[in-house]
Length: 241
Image 1 (cartoon, rainbow, N blue to C red):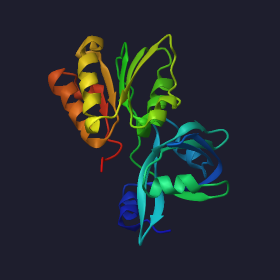
Image 2: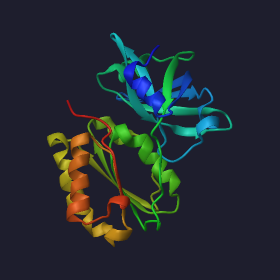
Image 3: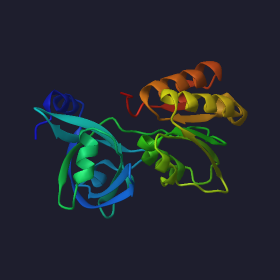
Image 4: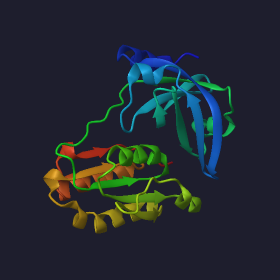
């Protein structure tokens, strides 16, 4: 499958292409699915870092469509990892629902990266939802001794069952139903984050929700709470219809 003009651009940016093979699947909840895959040489070539993601190419119509997904539990020695899909209407979810052992999918690695905050934060302040759960868990794994406060938006009732990697001794989580296109999440973050912030210059805030909510919260954290740009990691993971 060709990758169209987007693939050409990624090649010019030195993107590397790989083919992944599905080895198994799990239906975690009605709205969340996990696939296990072999990496086609990816991990040996690119290494591993927290929140590492790849661009997957899904066929659809007369052109391919690329979507980004975070690697779950990458194992360079075995050449394996998993991918997790928050299911909704769309090409990626349709592919994930039907994927079975032996199926393959093409991927490109370009643009992924992670820089650990320095000095290390006293507490992680994390805001996410099911779409960003793999990256959120990867972040928690990368700071095994650091306390964290998590605001986790739940569009579906069964999202409360999703496998957030919590350590009750170090982590507190606030599950927030998705209301008002993210407005309730914004309200609860504004109510609870300032008292946990500490020195803004040494804070670390990680935000990964829908694009509009991420923009709103990023502006709040940087402009109203005065957290420096390099102490905020923010990325809109999806766009509300």
